[in-house]
Length: 141
Figure 1 (cartoon, helix red, strand yellow):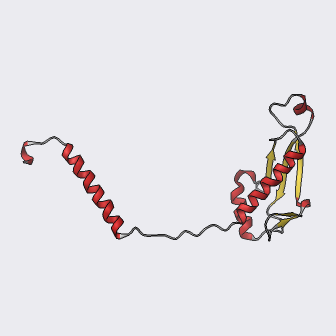
Figure 2 (cartoon, rainbow, N blue to C red):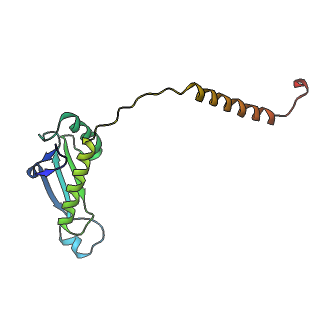
Figure 3 (cartoon, rainbow, N blue to C red):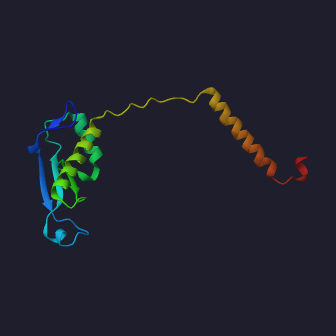
């Protein structure tokens, strides 16, 4: 069991790991050893989530989630398979924790009467400055 929060936990058999060869620098190690990790987690069919957490997780995952609801986290940060595996699990936990936080409800506010007045005064002042920059014509006197 992987405990994410006090109420959310996922079973380790729900997570599937695929090991692939990493690209980039690393010499012979990169060419021979499959150190990069692809973590696959079925978000849609996981029993450990409520519907609102599931929908937030799908929204947060963005392009990392397939059309079938499988979250894919790929990591090749480290040169060892063990560290990459741990990093992928930590990224999954972080994503689920973020999805479990309820978003703050926005309360619409109105600008106060005094702030409206200040804005209008500032606009009038700016208009006056611009008016003073204009060339004076004979018929304005």
